Amino acid sequence: MAEVITMPRLSDTMTEGKVSKWHKKVGDSVKEGDVLAEIETDKAVQDFESEVNGTLLYIGTEEGGSSPVDSVLAIIGEAGEDISALKGGNANAGVAGKPEEKKTEDKPTSVEQANAEIPAGVEVITMPRLSDTMTEGKVAKWHKNIGDAVKEGDILAEIETDKAVQDFEAEVKGILLYQSVEEGGSSPVDTILAIIGPEGTDVSGIVAGGGKKPSTASNQQTAEKPTETKTVDQPKASASSGDRIAISPLARKIAEEKGINVHDVKGSGENGRIVKKDIEGFTPNTAQVAEKSTAAPVEATIAPAMNFVQGEDSETTNSQVRNIIAKRLAESKFSAPHYYLMVEINMDKAIEARKEINSLPDTKISFNDMVIKATAMALRKHPQVNSSWAGDKIIHHGNINVGVAVAIPDGLVVPVLKNADQMNYNQIASSVKDMAGRAKSKGLKANEMEGSTFSVSNLGMFGIETFTSIINQPNSAILSVGAIIEKPIVKNGQIVVGNTMKLSLACDHRVVDGATGAQFLQTLRTYLEQPLTLLL
Image (cartoon, rainbow, N blue to C red; front, side, top):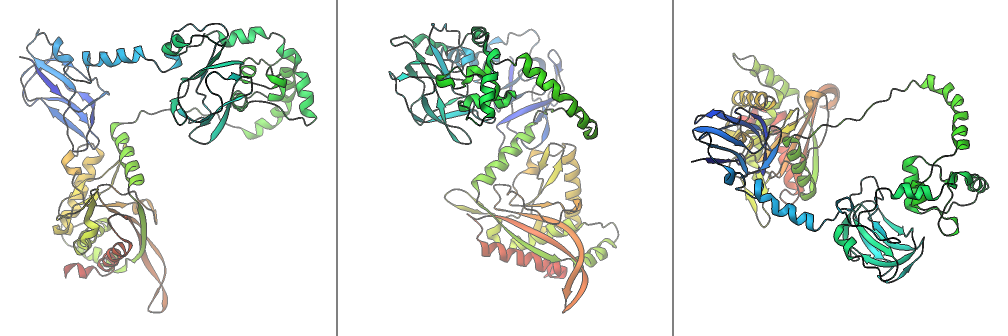
């Protein structure tokens, strides 16, 4: 009997997995223990092994594709076996997806989804895109109610975008027949906002169909005004005399995007007001093109000296790791009230201690290893810093597990040193080196990146003197380590050359109070400035 293989949950925070590579293809024989695929989770890429014998009959997610945890990943069974009923065995794949699709077809929300024929004289008003980052708009206030007469230029509503609240003006005359949302409601850009037309018009079919406009509408508008471009000299002349141009905000925005000089456009609205359709139907006349051509020689005399090189934008699809990192950091930054404490450490004695330690056979430690050891010991003395916020309680962790931030091509991962306070320098050094190497080659296991109670991020090797980090939740603090800098310092009342390093501690104020964080840094400073105290 065929066996359904589902997308496994390979970490406690994993919600979906990406198939980085399939090691088997449909029709291949599979044995128990064979690597079926490489699965990219929110923390690492792991080999996924088969637990059954048989033939690979079905692949639910292609290479590079993602699917939710517990959805059908593959089906293994006997060659030729009928598996049609198994393919749709979850809510995210196969047949189970069809009811949702049918529901969407019955109730389209986008103008582009509809096929309803719009009667003559009826105008569908869509939610405008009033900023380049706007995806939906909120109706802050309606200035017209259903049944009200609307004139061109009347303010229909106040639309709240992601940046501001703007008046939205009508560009047609008629009766307001339909409003898609109440005051305070939102709808996506380009979906129906309102319908204006002759009184008594039945617009139920337009609403049900999504209100699609004829694709040739803009061409028809242009065709209806064949002489517009012949009369552009008059508004241009009035503009030069200092007269204010009457133009709707939406028409002005479209003109800016298209590079159209509004002084060259004749408005068809009330009192010569320029509206959206005037901009969309505007075509420069021969005189305006000639004017631009005349200016070209002047520009040409400047261009050779500038010698600009035109670049092209490009896109890179985010990996699953990058998407999850972005999600986790945003959640941390906007949910945990961060504050920062900074201290400067005299590293002269730490430099001497490291030199002596590295003179021992088979021993080579870094300053980062020393910081990790000192941090773990300081956490033992300040358990509140080694705690996590859990809503209605604070969890005080018994073990000290230090996460060490490691940069990888896809972003950042944090392998964890378990019980770091009980490790010696050699154990810390070898563990960090091993996990950092495997992190960059995607060889870390998920359990090696779980369970941290505190994190350390070091950019000192890049020459960064000081920086702050975002807390790696559920931790309540993270230590940022800068470079060791040689500079003048005051020692015993004398200015001498010394070596200093700056540390920054980001704390979650819900768990770690300012005084607690400061005391932790004082202890950490003592351990680094006087390394022998670590032995006490």
